[in-house]
Amino acid sequence: MVKKITVVGAGYVGEHTAQGLMLQELAQEVVVIDVVEDMPQGKGLDQRQSAPVWGKDTRVTGSNDWADTAGSDIVIHTAGRPRKPGMSRDDLLEANVAIVRPCMEKVRELSPNAIVIMVANPLDAMTYVAKQVLGFPKERVFGMAGILDTARFRAFIAMETGVSVRDIQAMVLGGHGDTMVPLPRFTTIAGLPLEHWVSKEKIDAMVARAAAGGGEIVKLLKFGSAYYAPAAGAVEMAEAIVKNNNRVLPCCAYLEGEYGHHGIYMGVPIIIGEKGVHKIVEYPFNADEQAMFDKSVEATKNLLEDVKKFI
Image 1 (cartoon, rainbow, N blue to C red):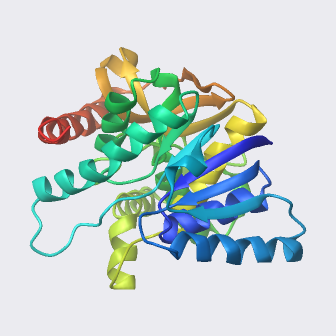
Image 2 (cartoon, rainbow, N blue to C red):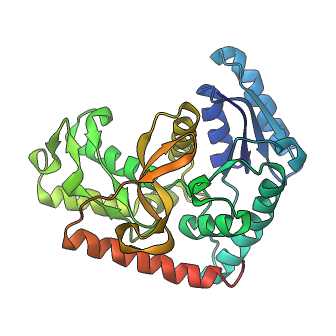
């Protein structure tokens, strides 16, 4: 257990992240901060009142004052705007940089030793913005996306095969979006390769569904986007840091030569522990997998060229 974890943003993802942190008792105090007056205080108080029922001693508090976040061990940034009708990609990037940049300036000032987990979209670009503003070592600034994409893939496999999700091992790498890179070749159920259980046609269908997983939920909800699974992914990362258990998890990490790329955030397997990113694990891609990964990198590079205009 650490002393303090701050969750930036008290929307659906933020509030469920805070609750997950409380239920796992990962910190003595969880601070949820938001610009909307009184709203984070209300959600924090509600969660504080649920703690006796759950039998948890973590204190969840809400605030509009960044001073309450000072000395955070971990900061999880969930705040951002969704794309609305009529907004161009540049409009969305500019709007979210305008949210992320001042928040990271406050983190740099008040919690200079924090590990920062980005959750806001577009994830790869916003994690890059955070690193540029913070000036922290790359080990302490990374993003939650691959865990979410992988969880979706594993869920679809479980739905198709009827086996427990606990027995499914999978990795989805690359950028968080349409060019993500599911890796069926490295996917197993109880040690047996995925093709032992299902046909190639069904594997291809599950891969496609995983890549479009976020959009499917947006379409079904008709407002907003996913929040249970993203929050769970952020909590899993925080747990690996707090417990220093060296989990191997797919996260958005800064590449400096790994997988043949430099100076870009991309979803890759990392060993995660108390210092943040302890090591990037390189999978032995075949030619097709490397081509998919390179395509994903190029898509993110194009996004970064646009986002750099607003940093």
